[in-house]
Image 1 (cartoon, rainbow, N blue to C red):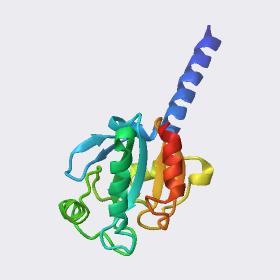
Image 2: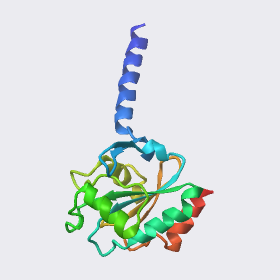
Image 3: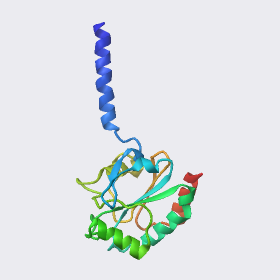
Image 4: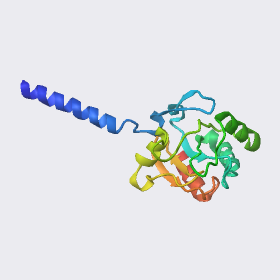
Length: 184
């Protein structure tokens, strides 16, 4: 009897440790704050393919907003969502407030895809979403974000399946081909 109790206790402890280590097994199990300051569950996008991108309004890659919106419009009815996460981590290229970022994106690039509150995407202050993307994905996809407009591709189940550096534009054939495969 004591042995069974001991095993049960050890199993309970082990289960707790496993759950702590793997708290977010899916990208879609996380919550964030949107660009308007409201809490948003990423579970609302489960079942969709997501392009997750860190953005900035004063970067050489900022014109990619236009192609991100075009990509979103092209595939949104087939199950794609683009999720933009503004960050000021690289050269102070996103100095504005959330409301300024939203205004810039909607006025200049007619962005209609979801945007979230500006937060770090690298370093010790990195937001949880980016911890998941850069630390809990497959080993070959891990590592700090290198610059603004780096893109992560997340499948319908919430697994990170590809990563594209800033220089790969949103309408690049290698990115679109992978998106089309995942949308099937």
